[in-house]
Each structure stands twice: as C-alpha cells, then as structure tokens.
Image 1 (tube, rainbow, N blue to C red):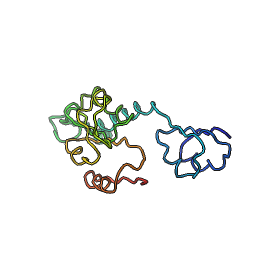
Image 2: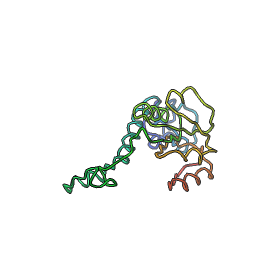
Image 3: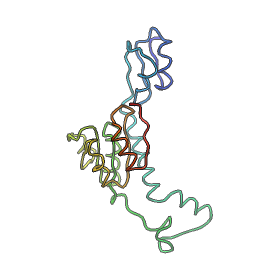
Image 4: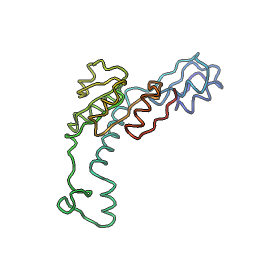
Length: 196
C-alpha cells in the first residue's frame, strides 16, 4: 500500500505494516498521533485544512448560546410543563439573560480554526473577541477575524481576565509548559491532558 487515508489514531499504529507507504493523508486537522504510532519518517504526512473552521465555529456558538440561554434548564421546565416568564423568576431559565453582543469570548489558539471561531462570534453575534497564541505579534488575520486583542501564552492570566466564555482551539502539540497548564487548571478548573 502506497497511500493511506484515515484517522491518525488508527493509521499511526499500522504505518509499520505498510513498507511501501509514500503518503499518509490524515482526516483530522492534527497529526500528532502519527508521530507516536511509529518511528518511521520516510513518508509524506499531510492533514486536512480549511474545512474544520466553520463547523467548530457553529459548535462554539451552539454551546455559548446553550449556556447563556440556560437551554438545559428550559428543556427540563418544558418537560415538567412549567412555563416561567421573565417577570415570574428573573434568575430562572427563561428569565433575564445577557445578550451575546455584551459578552467577551476568549479564543485560545488563533490558527485557522480559532480564527474561524473568532470571526463567526464577532461578526455573527457581535461578541468582543480576545485571542491568545504562542506569540502576541498582530497578524492581518486577527483584524479580519474581529479579534480586538491578542495575548501571548505567557500572558494567559491577562488573556483570561475579560473572557466570560472561552474556546480552546489548540492543536494537540507540545506548546504548553507545565506552568501554563497549571495556570489553565487553576483558572478554569479545567485539566488539560497533553502529550509533552
């Protein structure tokens, strides 16, 4: 077999069984699992690009809307045939809520996917977007995506401060130091398991 197409976790371990392999096309944006599945490096490995941004932007918008509009709580009330209006219980689902245009969202990872997420949230919902990447150097793609401020990974606590919502659009690559991982864990009560 000269060409292999598939998910990195599936393809990585079978690379050694394909001695004539010249090209492996990953069906994912990231290819890190190809590097751990085999020691071979005598073939070309490519990833899918340009197709995941819009899907991830919709996914991020869906979850921000669900949280802000208390979707799960509203569904539970509906199943109980309980109709709560804004005047009945301002803090209950269906009560007063923030408009998305009043929120700041942080996009951690401003690659192709992160920029798509930022653009959809800023232009589609009027959200203020701050971004974070390895280095804070401004790029034309930041302004085009509606990102108002860009922070370096070293400034992670400053990046997180204004964000009321956070999207992580990071490749599974060793870009975080243990200190930054610890900061993420403490700040967000989120544990990231990364292969460093």
